[in-house]
Amino acid sequence: MKNRKCFFSTFILALFIVIFHIISKTNINFKFNDIGDFSTIFISIMIDAIPFVILGSFVSAIIQIYISEDNIKRIIPKNEILGYFEMALIGFIFPICECAIVPIGRRLIKKGLPVGLGVTFMLAVPIVNPIVILSTYYAFYDMHEMVLLRTVGGFCVAILIGVIIDKIQDKDKVILSNYMENDILCNCGCNNLSYGNESKIKLIINHTSREFLDITKYLIFGALISSGFQIITNHADFTSISNNKIMTILFMMFLGFSLSLCSEADAFVGKSLIYSNSLSGLAGFLILGPMLDLKNLITLYGSFRKNFVFKLSLVTISCVFLICLLFMICGF
Image 1 (tube, one colour):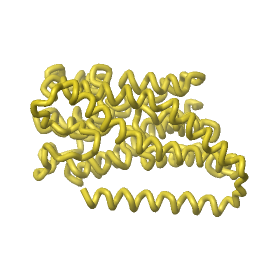
Image 2 (cartoon, one colour):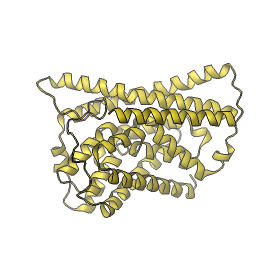
Image 3 (cartoon, helix red, strand yellow):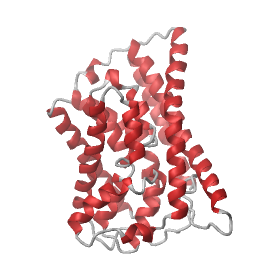
Image 4 (cartoon, helix red, strand yellow):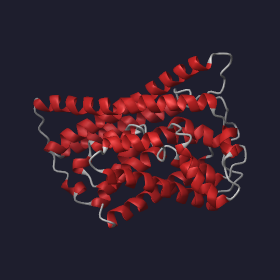
């Protein structure tokens, strides 16, 4: 746990160094009014996102308390091809949060779920679920094509990655042998299975509040970075990035990974970046973030073997980049 915190702190420090370096190279002159603009943008992002974070935290609590992995496993079809499609759509029934998806996916794989299906499950559920679709629709109320790009893109990429991983990964070398089932990998309580004799209502309230606080700290960080980015773009010349759609895709994928936003709220941050980025770039931000971000990468390394995590990360980044290139070719 101490190593994970050290890695996270080092990464955040490196991120700020990169940001300040960019600012110094662009010769930006800030004005006093920019403070007010920054506050307005930040508050608007938070106000729009918080209701969906609360809703997502509550639904996740209901699922965690009342739905077991065995319940999920019973509805998996025996046909492997149909299984990929069902795993990619199961989020409509179980809209599980990103924090919970890794330990749940690990337990399903340990209980006999094929690795490819488990990967598709972990990658698709945080994107292809009603809460995320609704929040994306609300954030991009005037650009409904963004909802389609994110949902369809996430669905297709999750299946593709699952199939590839199933072909290249040794099935017996996936899960860490010294992994503790009750190890708390995050603060939301999603993978704490020791409920004891507490009332379920109390458990739901506790789980919802803990997950809400855990998600909100990442949302605040992302909203701060996004607000600052908007102010910077008002003064700086980013034509070298914004005029190059491939660079835009890569840059937005980097933001999606580094900000570690909740998928129920990242659309509102993405919306604030729309004026300086293409839809294909935004798709990279909204698809990669829920599938592979900094906090999930740390959780993956605590749950699976390094070789598996490396392959999964490489394949995920490559497939998301390719689907965004396809969107770019199609004119988005």
